[in-house]
Length: 341
Image 1: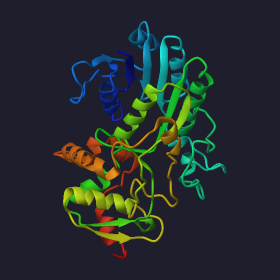
Image 2: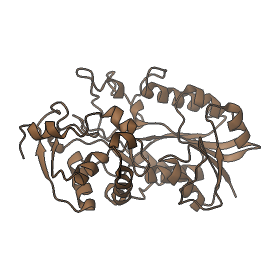
Image 3: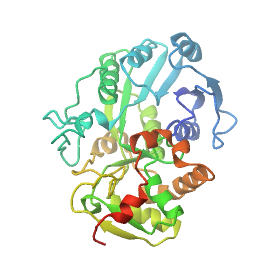
Image 4: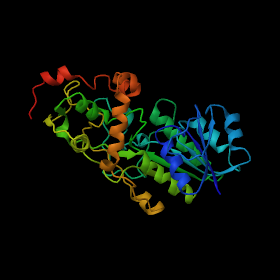
């Protein structure tokens, strides 16, 4: 039986990744800071505590060697060096990066989103050959680019599949965008306001579909960079309608022709131009087919969010989301807005 180590196993992507590898016949060691275990894993999964910053601890977990390392939480050039130092003891690696590394070729990218005329005008869809930001330490995007550069530079010693997901969704998300609609429905809000006429498209990535890509890449070791998104990129209005259907509610949507007016109309998917990624390379190289559509994934997400909100303020349950969107539920401003139905 082939042996796999999953780093960051207790997180949103790590949980279904461990389960997918086990189903495919791998002997899996699930490593995380807390050493936790997901209820979906069988007892055959070995769990270990791992401080990712401790090189010696990681080397000890790898031990005499393993066939595969899956790194869900790798972040920068230092992590690339850490992983490539294991070359010779590891058969191959699959590492999670991000679509935020892409540049539109004119210096606009995820780091310039809020600058005047700073929103990137990407091709639709974005292929993996699209330019990326320069590697560095300045931002999440540049750090992820540095991670990729470091891994690919050592590909002759450690075959690596780099996966670039988009707006990751599913249970256990620290940035649960679907909360925008779920909480409104739970609060009895039957009217919402969407900017850009609800037509914004920001390509989502189900954690289960990312796990499927990991499974496929693990079975076909090699060096490649692949987008890791769902089979479709729904509009924000379509996302709201799909969540309403799961929750059995009827709502009214007011539309803004242009950008949000302050907090009104602003959602975690609201973008002035489409952000959609090409999945043909994954289909061609790995025979990837999504295991779940966006709509099919929603029931478990809605159930998890509903339970996570029970009896506590949303900012307590989702601090990362609250920092990114502090005015996500500014109901008084919405009620006062002059918008069309």
